[in-house]
Amino acid sequence: MERVPVTVVDGDSETTIRVPSGTVLRDALCEHGFSVYGSISRVANCGGRGLCGTCGVRIEESVPAAGYHDAAAKRFGYPRLSCRIAVTEPLTVELIEKVLWGQLRPD
Image (tube, rainbow, N blue to C red; front, top):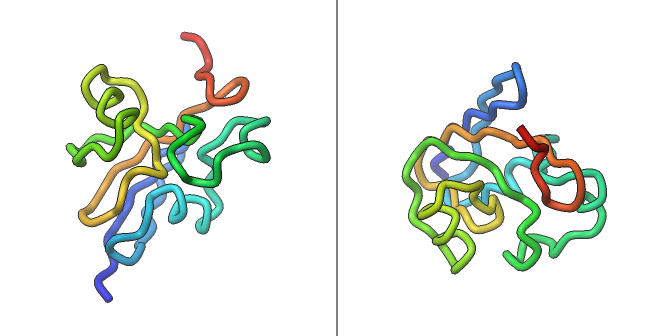
């Protein structure tokens, strides 16, 4: 099975993981010990069904949108849902610090 490199940027740290092609990004990140959730949503989330909007990450590459939230995120430039992205090509993913639920820390 082909493995695809995913570079994960977490603050000042950068790590490259290799995942099987077709793996859901959220699952790949969680399996490698990266959290895509805030403190509360870490235990109270939709489990990757694309309903809660709390697993947002930033990605540099142009990945096709999957679902209404992901399409809007891509169009307006806010974080993409990691549970809606299948890894089929190399990606660079930035984890985003969240304050409460899926909210982002204000600038």
